[in-house]
Image 1 (cartoon, rainbow, N blue to C red):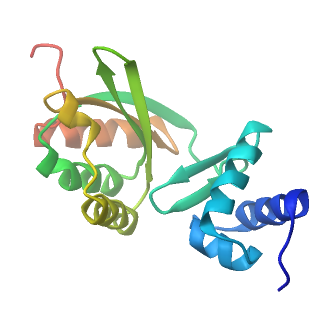
Image 2 (image 1 turned 120 degrees about the vertical axis):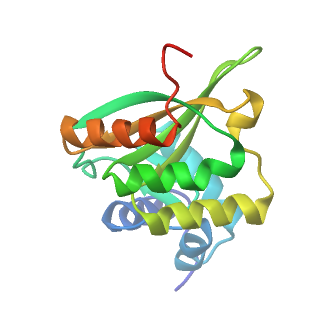
Length: 177
């Protein structure tokens, strides 16, 4: 394929992301468009600036419009140590929810939120591998383990089950604490 330029390339990339059922990595998109991964990062930034609902996850880029089968959403307060993160995420996805993000309350910056976007065990494993491979820190390490997750599911009953599982595992931050 010949190298695509500018707006033509961005439209090509947008179509690829919109029609993909799974996240697409910057490297995969770079190969398709015959450009560097850094060019893709710039293109994604420009597309987001134009209002396209593109998010970068640990598995790659996702186009959010028309993807949501989740009808219910809830924020839950959690507390655990960094080495329990994988167990927490697996517990949530096995309960049938998507973990959309993680947030903390930072004393200087205020609320900091980062996308997680995991819906099944394979995505959790890929997320954890990326954390290990990059040596990245968890946001919860800045707050002694206290953090929030936005979780989504097809219905409130599924969210209730996930919250119960979190409570039983001791990961839920309760008001009495």
